[in-house]
Image 1 (cartoon, rainbow, N blue to C red):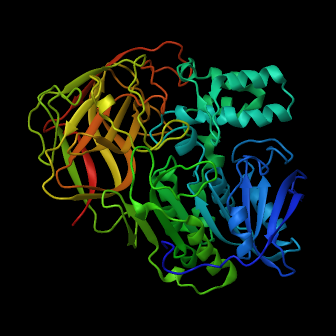
Image 2 (image 1 turned 30 degrees about the vertical axis):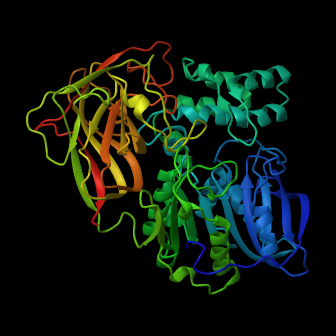
Image 3 (image 1 turned 120 degrees about the vertical axis):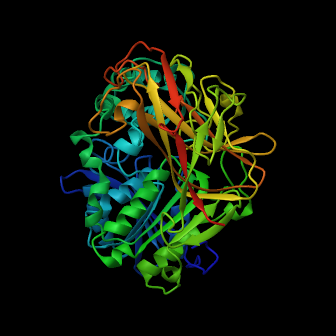
Length: 589
């Protein structure tokens, strides 16, 4: 599945384009599509791409160039309420039924042989997951690339309950431009939207000007966007997982899924969690054994590459993952679709179901299950003499459990949050960055191992078990896994956050009793990374990662409504009774 084990269909045909064809949905709304097809009298399989980003935009999808010469009809459609299509846009709510109707419409096109697949990245991946459980009769295979699973976690809110502020604000402001134009909200409104953002060439998600990230209350954004993004205020009014979000819970539909899927994601992707969750969920719970055995997973070392790109770059952020990381995803996808849509026995289904990129060693490796059956979950404990503040402190990360040790403490002042430096995000700098600038801050606790005497591979899900107290009724705790190179560079590997009120449940929040010790589980998602000999393993603990996540105001008030912020004193315990640690998925060498 690496693009070297067999060749897909070769370019044979010239391409002909049919513009602005209408597909009528079951409720009468018409969606506009462009057709890219082989210039031939024959009939071909169809690949459907459904986008909210303008099928006629300045940033064309490369699928329209790659697949038609190789004997595929490509349908590129504006989703409901976007650009050339009719209706009102509300993220995800219509995508299942509209996807079903579009696929069945595409199967009847005069150039179609009635066999349909879907492809696309990001929101174009989300719409594929959304349609899968509706089971269109003509849908035979899919390839969602870094597509979200649900609107709540992880999309608007993180899996730990914090608001994904860093990317959703510029993203929905960007999305609001088209809606504002469609609703004729006026030049002043459009100008006001543009005042918020920094728009640069070749980026689909503009950056938000720093001042606007600090604006309080966050709820104001719903009112500021108003009719141009009416759902955004709904999102902010529902900070807790519950009935409002259930329509978007695609994980509830695994048992209704019967489509072979090639799931593509990456370790620094903002939707890494979603790709792994969907692959595992469908593989375990799909309708039939045949569907469960027809799921494949490809995980690379990239970030969420937009716009509409495939992961062909050599890395993300500061790092170069080497020549092995450079792949042509379309070459892999065409083998997938050749097998399922053309019936070509190219051997792809005889290959192992999982292919992952192991960072550090910078190589691809085939696997047969996720998480890996041979994993040895190994705790590394936080140790100190009570002064683990910053990388100049006395924090130690050790496989030996602590005895009686004093707690570490720091002040979390949301007016002076720890700044985001890369990670699994969007809208702000993504991927790998040197963490030393934030590790020098006194409100960051740093626990570092001695230099490793041999390579240590960490592949799989990661979590931190943290015993902590706060002077506040609600607060946040963050954790970050870092690879410290011999020259001191701190490479961020994985990170996570937990909003204290959601420590037990995202549906049933519970405030803290100030000063009481609680156990918090911080999900750092997953990785595949080798800490090399001479490197050190490090864990950073703090209470903010801004602006990726919104700042917890420490008040315990309703989320997104505070105008004022308060400081909180945080204590992190690591002793025989409260052994705070990170649990690493170690792969035996």
